[in-house]
Amino acid sequence: MYAATGGEPARDDVTDGCYVNHPDVGLRDWPTLYLAPNYRRLQEVKGRGDPTDQFHHAQSVRPPGR
Image 1 (tube, rainbow, N blue to C red):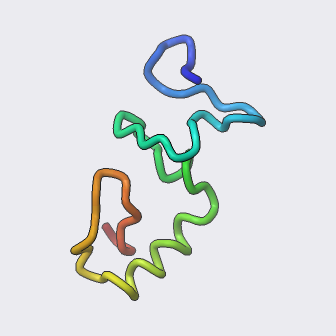
Image 2: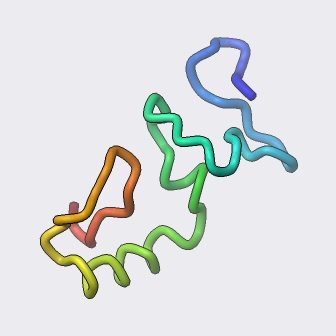
Image 3: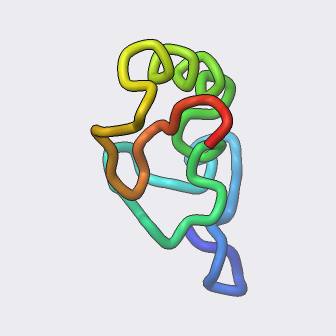
């Protein structure tokens, strides 16, 4: 799961560097690892449904511009 450095996950064709449904708040690029090409679309939805980001946690989708 982790690269030789132990800090960032290793990416490959199978895991893409993270476990599904395992929030790892230490990941710096979690939107790419967990949500990949869908993050921007999810940000648009979040912006319409919760524009003030009232409902959030460490790895929740942020509204556009945040």
